[in-house]
Image (cartoon, rainbow, N blue to C red; front, side, top):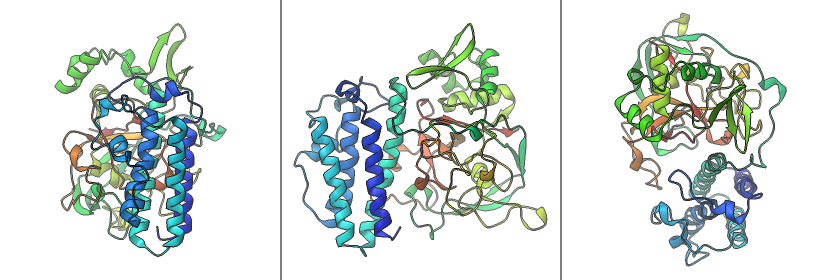
Amino acid sequence: MSDPTQLAQWVRDARERSLGLVADLSPEQLKGPRLAIVNPLHWEIGHVAWFQELWALRQGRGERPLREDGDSLWDSGAVPHDTRWDLRLPSIEETKAYMREVRDRVVDGLAVDPKNRDLHYLVLYSVFHEDMHDEAFTYTRQTLGYPSPPTAGSAPSHLAAGPLAGDAEVPGGTFALGAAPDETFVFDNEKWAHPVGVAPFAIARAPVTQEQFAAFVDGAGYARRELWSEAGWEWRIRVEAEHPVYWRHDASGWQRRDFDRWVPLEPHRPIIHVSWHEAEAYCAWAGRRLPTEAEWEAAASLAPGAGGRGLSPRKRRFPWGDDAPTSEHANLDARAGGCADVAALPAGDSAFGCRQMIGNVWEWVADDFRPYPSFVPDMYRDYSQPWFGTHKVLRGGCWVTRARLLRNTWRNFYPPDRRDVWAGFRTCRL
C-alpha cells in the first residue's frame, strides 16, 4: 500500500465502521457486563484510536500524545482486562471526539508526508488492527444479545443456494507454506514461506452445515465421551455444553439466536459459534478429521501440477486467483448480514473445487498456533508471540471480515474453547 490517497480513505472507512458499530447502543450497553471474552465497548473504541495514535502519529510522525492519560486508559498490554470496566474513561462523546481527531490527524499526516513508506506501513497496520477490533465488536454484540449491527446489510437471494456435498481430491507434494516477501503487507506470523510436504488428501468442498451438525447433536454427540479428547470433555463438562452455545430446541425444532432474535435453524448455512473442541468431536462422530493448516492452504492456493500430477508450485493469493475479492467471490464486509448457504458463490472456488475458503465462516484447522521457522516479531510484539502454543489456528475469514485483510496465507488464532467467534470448520477424509 503506497498510495496515500487510498490509505487515507481506508483510515476514514475503518473509523466510520467503528463508530457505526456502536452508534445505536446506550451508555449501559457500551459498558456491558464483565465477561472474560469481551471488552467494554466504551473502552474498546477508545483503544483502537489510541493504538492508531501511538503507532501512526507518535511513532510514525514523532507527535506528542493527544491525551496525557491515554496510555493509562487504553494500552491493552498494560491495563489488565478485568479492570477495564472500572476505569474513569472519558465520556462517550469525548471518546468519539478523540477517535475523530486521531483520524483527521492521520489523514493530514499522509497528505503532508506522502512519500514516507514507514508511515504508510504504520498507518496500514493501525487500519488492520481496527478492522480486527471491528469484527470483535460484532462478537460482543452477539454474545450480549444486542441487535444486529446497523452497518450490516441483508442477504441477497443468490446466497440461498443449498448444500454442497463431496470432497476435493488434492494430490501430494511439496509447497511453500506462508507468505512470500513480495507481498505488500503481511503479519509476523505469516513470515515466511517455507517448504512443507503434504500427502495426498481429500477435503470437503464446503464447510460443515448446521443441518449436519444438528445430526451430531441429535445423535447424542455431546454425551458420548469416546468422541471427545480429554481436554474437550473437561471443557464440555465445565461449561455444561449440550449443543452449540446459541442454539435452543422447541416444539418446532432447533433455533439459533442471531444477535437479539431467535430464528429457525438454516439447514444449509455453515455451522457457526462452535469451539475447536466441538469441531474435533464432530469429526470423530462423522469418521472424518480436521485439515492441517498446510492442507488447508494447499487446497485454497494451489492447482494441479503439469499433466494433473502433483501440485503446481505457483500459489494464488486467493482461492480463485489473484484478483481482489468481489461480492461474487466471497461473503465479506458484512454486506449480507450473516452467512450464506454453503453452495453459494461458485465464482470463489479454488482450483480443486473448494468453495468459500475465503469469507462466510472462519474455519478451525487441526494445528496449534506456532511460529514459522523464520519468525521474528513485528513492531507490535504482542500480536502473535504471546499466543504460540496455547491457541488453535483458524483460516479464511467470515461474513463480517474486511476484504482488505484477507489472503490465503492469513492466520487467525483463538483458544480451543472459544465459541463466540464466527467460527465453523470443514473436514477431511480419514
